Length: 176
Length: 432
Image (tube, rainbow over all chains, first blue to last red; front, top):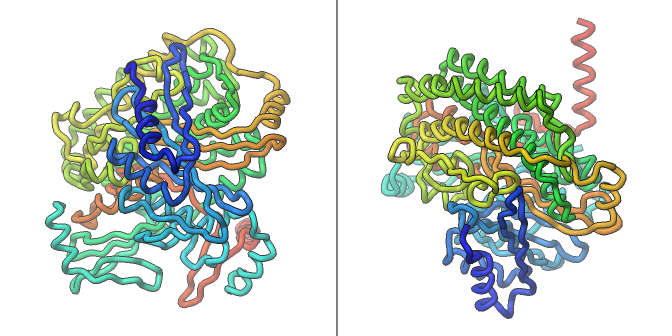
């Protein structure tokens, strides 16, 4: 295990370069097992306008592995998060990153990151269909899990859609 | 297929967005072969359309989602203890790893310290499960290339570890050994003894398994240079597990960011370069990684047993106290675990005053490996489709509705209608 933490190094780099656009950045340590060797997670809060620049910056460090994107309906906005891992391949060096941002429901779009992280396509299609978020410049906008004939107005993980509204749409589309 | 060949193919193609929303690159002599969602060559439902020029695959379109059950939504209606058994149903083969990862995510969000003994027991079960999963895969792979006798031989050998898992946990699958804050069953002396016997059994036959699979001429001819995934493609497309390692991409959470008992030991991941001195990134390499990992699992499980700490197996024994802790606490946490197929991630969030899960996200290895399928297929032949598809060890988690197409008529059945149909069918069978 190295003495110098990769997470602290990365954190400093992010703070120096994105001081104005990162709302919060913290490093969490976990110490599993009997020997309690350290493992690190970094949690970042930012805005949708800056997230792509931050991910591009990560690419300069090391090819980030995109694990998944997920969302949460928080009322007026959808909280969208990316989980990445960096510095894989070396013992104890890997750092997990969770980058979150809030996207208002009345202006519900984010930019696709597939031009810099190609592997993000499946997860972007997933979050698009489940929350109805427009992913700008996504190379493939088709549903991934939902059937292709699923009504565009219904998004299974949104909390502001009622069953009655959904039934009305299913009726209209002849899918009763 | 080289980049040059791929670019040459792309120049000849046209783009088509057909009736079934299929997107395939075509040329004037090519034709389309639909495979799935239900097909004898696929063990689970997913739909793949292949565009063929003669025998050669020139484009692929993959669509999962045929049995999505909405686990994440189900979780928000239950507290974590109620969801724990459900999390195991995400996968029938590596069910322990899902409950293990979910429990770790909850513990991370609520800062629950799992006793070291429980961390070791979880890791021991995970390694036994890996032996069972890799053998199961090897048997299925033999079946995919039409080698039925090898399939039966491997599955016969797999029974031993499944019996031990049943002896130790009480179940052949869905082991129910995890609990928030630890495990539900301790490893007693006789259970440890049985596990050691099983590990010795596999240590004795591992060479035979390796020789039977890896040295077999038929296996090698069918899998060498089939389904090639280059290292840079694996990295760009986010491949995980043996699929990534088979392309010489060093990625294994047990090594890179060790959790539980793994952080106490030196473990080096299995790479084709270390086995053969070179990497082809093909089905044979992915197979070799899995077969060799059986050996590393035996060694790891032995180390965990030799160093099993004494002490409690649960952070809190009384269930009402755990529930209180969940209800009064708040926070978010992630857990990453190396399943037999690759990285599993659970994100868990809970809010103060509510014992139900606020948000859950599950990421399975096949989700990450799905995008690696098209480059593997390109340039290969029709006959290689089953074994290449199987080489990522796909495991589809999907959805609860079904669309039936009869002629030009489409009808989407609701859950209630499907229940009615199944009741009628059961009555019809009963009444002859």
